[in-house]
Amino acid sequence: MFSIKDFPVTAVDPSGEMVTGSDLKGILLPDLLRAWRAEAGSRSGRGKPLSQKEIARRAGVSERWYRNLEGGQPVSLAGDVLERLGSALTLGPDERMVLYTRAYGGATPPEPNIEGSDADALRALAHLVEAAEKFPHYLIDHTWDVIAHNPAMAAWFPWVREPSANLLRWALTSPEARTQLVDWRRNAEVYLGQLRFALAGRPKDAALRGLLDELLAVPECLEIWDEGPRVVAHQQRHRFRLELPRIRPEPFAVTSQVLLPAYLPGIRYVVLVPSEDGADDATEEFKGVPST
Image 1 (cartoon, helix red, strand yellow):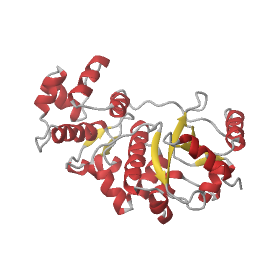
Image 2 (cartoon, helix red, strand yellow):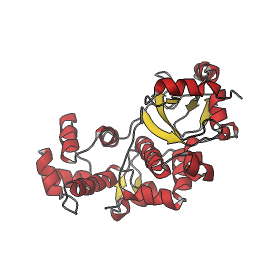
Image 3 (spheres, helix red, strand yellow):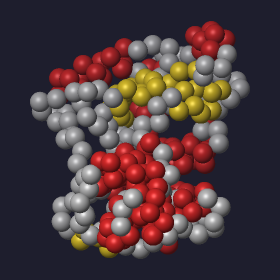
Image 4 (spheres, one colour):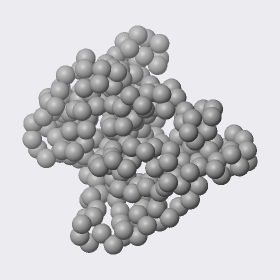
């Protein structure tokens, strides 16, 4: 298994400032290209990264062009070239989104002005979340801070009532999450992949980088982060299992539905519903979920 830390790199970020691979822990495009090339080699059973020459041949570009791209040098880019490059590196849809984002300078929608022009829209959305019944509904920002939640979410996860509640911080650093999230490591891989995706779009976001530093202080999280360049977008319909005896005696599966408000970029509306497996029985059983 190849690790991102095996590929130190110094490059120019979209702002024109010099940054190092250790600063952003594998978020810059050169870091990702090297790690993706290593992953492609592993998937092919070669036990070593695919060569720059082979990636260039597969993508239909010159070896010099690809070497410059991986070295952080300016090159001309076009959508069809990036599409071929994604195929050459055997990238999935989430990795391709990151490739396009980083290649085109990391442009992202502006954060919503939740204390100014967007305040009314956010309050309306929060009211919708809080009025929901039966299953957990919650609202988070681009750093996973919990903005609003309904009573069912608080009944399932009392930590959301705490000041500055943060989903990733709870899931990856709290002892209770190790038992409540069945197969904790698999969930941790998904959450860290989402954080890598977020940082790929906002590599200089102080809150995201601070959260990353905090999470990577956990040895298991650092190990997962360094294992490979996995990125996860919004993980729509992510199915996972919970162990919450106060809600249901036996572990149960839920699916997360993620909604992205068009008028509030960076905000996510998430609903947890019982898995479709035995949905009728699950709906009946969850009628007794406490509302306070």
